[in-house]
Length: 281
Image (cartoon, rainbow, N blue to C red):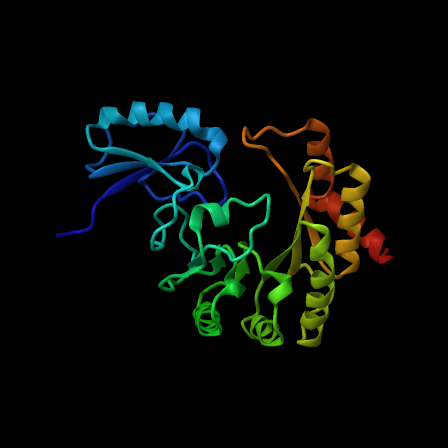
């Protein structure tokens, strides 16, 4: 028996959305030209897309095959990763879950404990916390990345607190293109600085674009001055900062915080800020 033919429907397009012929974004089914499929999956990443997802599910039932809804927004634990099904080719997930319990993160609630998965080829690693995995698993991931046609990107993030010298050495050996760390809470900063020192000691160029850092901004109690200090301190620690605006359950964003975020995301603006902080002309 062959594999099931599954059409996937997404309420919104993201950088990870698949682009194959059976992936559809916020549209009605093309009934006259639609291929034979066994199932239709409406995949929902963000909880604020539930109304749109429910509308899409109802519209796609006209195809006449079972329609299922699921995805991270439903707080359903992920299963074994299938390349290209819900994220585009090149993205891979080799583990799910995280041992931490950060107040702003839904991963522990959704995934439970850390689970190592069968390693599938890809160059953009979307794991929740890769470095929390066993050394054998992490090394196997590095070996997989070393044979890919493109340089590795760690979009899922690397936890600075548990970075080891051998991690940094292997990241240099595989010529990782972009490594994202995180500065979300005040106690993240000292580990971030220490990780930067480890990376530099293992041959990574200090303050290069390859060493990036997500910085959470706009949560309850945050101020523009406090957020800007964290972003500036991130640059001083040797990273390229990326402001990540906190969004509540309904997905709403404060317009003022949105404008502040753009100043720390747009390349032409961010580049000038970073050069000024580093004292470069």
